[in-house]
Length: 124
Image 1 (tube, rainbow, N blue to C red):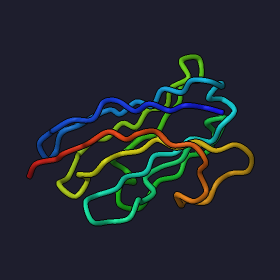
Image 2: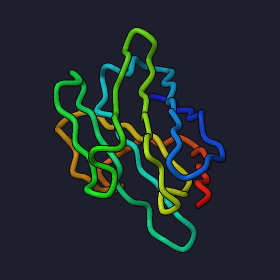
Image 3: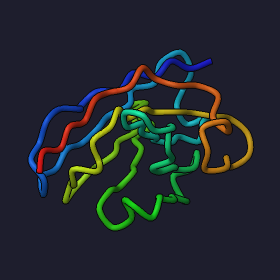
């Protein structure tokens, strides 16, 4: 089992950048595919990005492709989400998620472990 703790959220103006971190504990993060999701007020939790155990495959939602980058540092048991060129519509609570086994589908139900979330607010 793994515990996930996100950090790095905050308030930023449109066009700015933030880097979110997800620290894993309890079991080495290298055992898991890792993902980021986000949930805006009144909306369902939505896929943002995923990275495989090896780090060799990454996938992004169309809305963030080219602006966000997911990386992992298994020596630090940490996954990152670098967010550039932020837009007001990126405002949401961002969640880190993890799952073992096969490469997950890009939906929340495919992930088993979740962090508590970190708030990102982008002002226009």
